[in-house]
Amino acid sequence: MARVSGVTIPDGKQVQIALTYVYGIGPLSGRKILEAAKIDPTIRVKDLTDAELGRIQDAINENYTVEGELQRIVTGNIKRLKDIGTYRGLRHKLSLPSRGQRTRTNARTKRGKKVTVGGTNKKVAAKT
Image 1 (tube, rainbow, N blue to C red):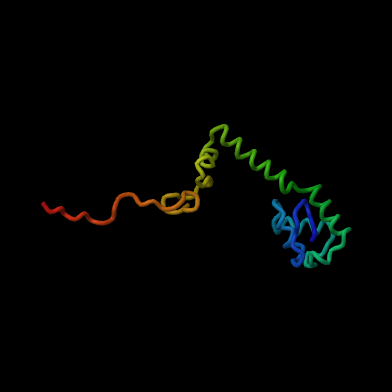
Image 2: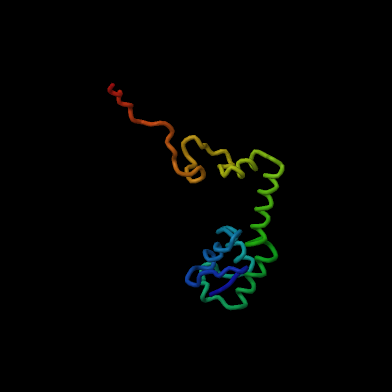
């Protein structure tokens, strides 16, 4: 099992796909990393040499912020928004969509299980 930036990447996959398992690296940046390291993107991870893995790691370290450091930065940005009381910060506090999506009918995963207000059955007249 190969490790890149503290993440074990799958052996059976192509390198360009396996790099996306690292937080902060997507398909495009994965291809750019492999281009900088001069490695064929279609080669399997299990076929990489230690020198090639080292070149990939060096390319990531000098050009990208990944994994724990990136997560700390993102968390800090969200905390800053909450602290200064911006609209986006309030949406994060309330666990609601923060990028303008509608919530009247959708956003079920954020808002939780549907709660029906009021009864739907008509009340039967009581006999006296």
